[in-house]
Amino acid sequence: MLTGSFLFGDLPPPALEAAASMVPNVDLSAVAAVYQLAKGSQALLRVLAEQMSQGGLTPPRYRILTLLAFQFPEGATVQTLAQALGIRPPTMTTHLNGLETGGLLRRNPDPANRRSTVVRLTPKGQRLLKQVIPVVASTTGSLLESFSQREVNLLVRLMSRLEQHCERLGQDHE
Image (cartoon, rainbow, N blue to C red; front, side, top):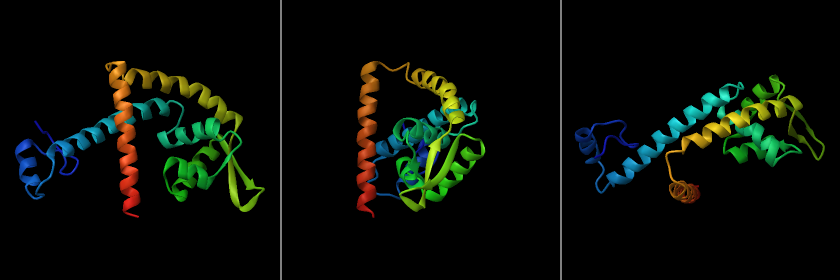
């Protein structure tokens, strides 16, 4: 039974059916699946954000620090980080401002391109990650403990396919 949809919000089944009648040939099971996926993602992010906040971080700022620590240990430009996170450079700059104020990273002019800035993790940022990563990893592990290994593997494959399909749809609309 459908209890709501991403397309129509948290409508009870009769109201959902009425709203869906405005869109002929809508696949209500697909709408319900996307809705549940969105709600599950929100719940997951809420739990992880709570754990990250113990270190004074938000999910985007945690991701920035982990990118700098593990993917770009020699530093990265603002543009590279923004692209890696899928956000716009001005939004990235806002996050970097907060992290820099907290002493977790530093920005220096790029010697290869004076118009660009290289962002690097500071020792303080490295120490914070060493504290926060185990907490987040433990929480992440417990999030899927009610799933079998087979279900986890299936979830990973399905989410990967969904991500690839969404990227293709985005490219088709550019």
